[in-house]
Amino acid sequence: PQAPDRPAAPLSPRAPRPYRPPPERELGTAVAVLPIKTVVQLNPEKHRAIAAQAEREAEEHQRAGDQETARRLMELADGMEGDAYAAETDIANEESRREFKAQQQQQQQQKQQQ
Image 1 (cartoon, helix red, strand yellow):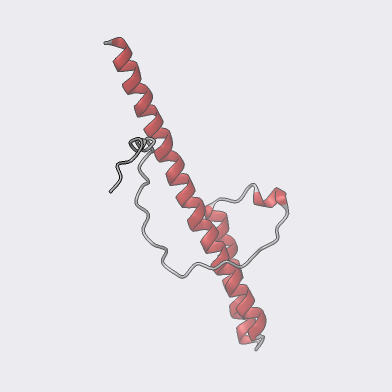
Image 2 (cartoon, helix red, strand yellow):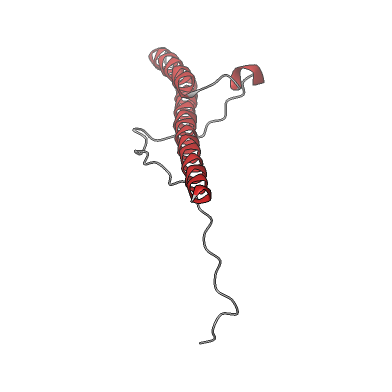
């Protein structure tokens, strides 16, 4: 075999991603069109509140015999749960990244002082 022309570059240092347990239910991908003013204020709790409201309304439509609307509302609920899970993952990754950067800066300061 041919030897490589140059050695592989080392991986850039990255913060380890925190463990996230898998979601408790299947995540959906239903699209929800919301005003941008609402979207920028959403956090995982608000996503889950929308999901809970959609589930309640789906139950009402199910009892009334409107299966299609109930199905679409459950898709919305699953999509909101997916958004909540993704937002929680993003928050955890960002916190981990901040901590990792602070550790790196502290290590560099210690090296400079030596």
